[in-house]
Image (tube, rainbow, N blue to C red; front, side, top):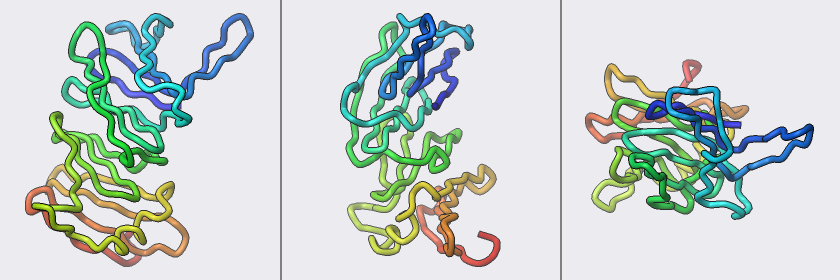
Length: 193
């Protein structure tokens, strides 16, 4: 259901295998292609870092030597820089339900969910709703924006290094812009949203 290409390999998450007419689902597993063979996925390349947890993979993204596995309830960061991939860290409450709530950029991977606006820069996960321990947007304001997280869209403007978070749910007519240059949030509203 989801895939990404990173480090000369393709990765597929939440996939099905048809063997002799029998289809078996792997909702919480990842399989990697062979190097430079983006359409070959031998079963020996399956990565099962966090299986049988009752959650399925929603999205996969890569940055630096890491593969980010987004489930609806958590984020798992897998180190794929060496010969053998391994689970480096897990973050509860940092998953998502909507692949449109992620932006891949030259600075890292950004995503939003009910609990925050996050940035993985290759080394750490940073919640952009906080600076020096202080919350920058009220919790109620954020919840109103992302309450229907399957309708949230996240975009990135490389020219001015800013993120745009927009809720496309019926009746929503606003969003927010986050400047990576200043670290500030600004409300955007109107028909252009």
